[in-house]
Image (tube, rainbow, N blue to C red; front, side, top):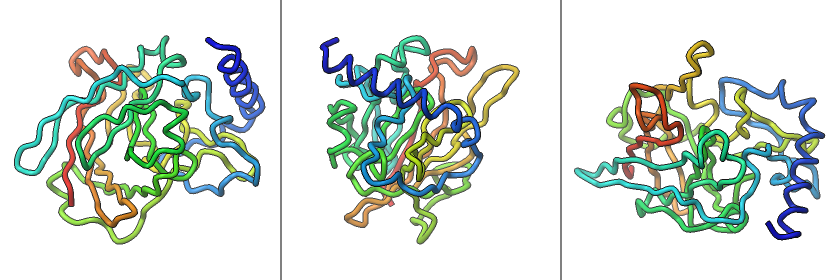
Length: 237
């Protein structure tokens, strides 16, 4: 780690410590719609240590195929597992091209090339506090991808994890809040993460839309191991 990277990390951790007193009250089951931080607030500095920006491109791979207009496969956002998450970056995806975007967390903040990013159970959209891509996301209650045939006309949100006081807004498990909201159910006894029956419709500045469905969070759904190995499917609307 270079001296500049060390200072950057220390700055993020310091901001995290200052925000912990409020973070516990910020969770919720619905998508979070909060006011942007005050002028001069850098949202990246309030990210939790496990989700701080990493100046490396993710080693995770996107393996998908497209049949009948539906793209499906896996996205490796395991990020080194629970113990390695703090030192591994997000995986960035272009859902229109169906490809991984080779960008690190720092450069992603000023990149318009990606649609969504994934890291463990944290999902983000290239918008608001996460990036300059001007994407928006609508959450549609639906059992499967086939149930969504047209894009919603309202209900779109952007990422907003820094509140009016430049404090972290996070989900109950510690992930920074995003337009995805609390996209999973969590069993406190078994610690199993289960995707909700939802389809996420992404809207781009050019007016195009992509419907995304998350079907599995684990590499091995039987033993519930390999968290962050997403099974996904999406289609253009």
